[in-house]
Length: 319
Ligand code: CP
Image 1: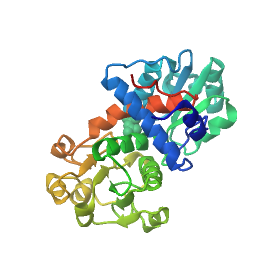
Image 2: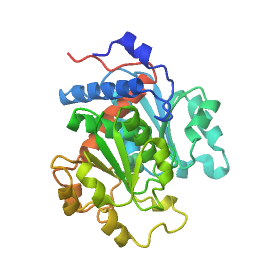
Image 3: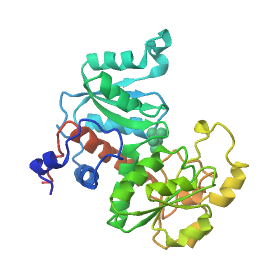
């Protein structure tokens, strides 16, 4: 078990802005902490006095179901107070700036700010203007660190390891912050990462990050241990990058036939939201290989681990 002194030796960050600059040891510590919170939950111990009296502010400038809900729940499970800011009904409409808005929320006592924004680098910017801890809940196409952590937690749960596995990220890699965070974390923990999608969404330059690039999904499936199906991010595309959704589905959609081309124990992940009939069929989404809802469950434990560690607090030991 990780001790308090080893946590302080390994983890020295006040913020979680991405996974690119974390070490394998730091990522493993986050996953171990998340496993500990998950084990407590399994044993019926849902609430912990880890962040009692701490105010966590959520600033979501893009829509979210999973990330926003689970950060809020994670904070409350750690006995923190929460402040959920909604841009559309705020004084942003009266001309107040993003930075002024954040500073006002911190002035109410927020010690942690969880931020999602369409502009890459926004969480980093916030660290310059407030003294709160900042957590990146997704910044444009840059990073979505807690999504990648929950993906890795789910892989470790199901496969027992990350090192040596072949993990395929399929779909809209170009616009995907989930892909970037997954690539950094999977490579650091020793996985082989293969990227697959249309050349307009997965160019060969991705191989500079140590990934293998493919454009024919059927060719790679027999070698894959985990396939992570990424959503087509139409909202970030400025022009059509493939002829039609139905053609995309024919070439890259996960169907029962494609699942049967993989290894019998191939694991299927998808960060959500999923678009049934675009990236995967309903029977694959709900089928025996799918861990999509386990990912969501694990997201809560991951976010508890992150909120605790950036405040220098660890999960209570198992009894
Ligand atoms: N996967 C993910 O980030 O989902 P939300 O956009 O619903 O938070």
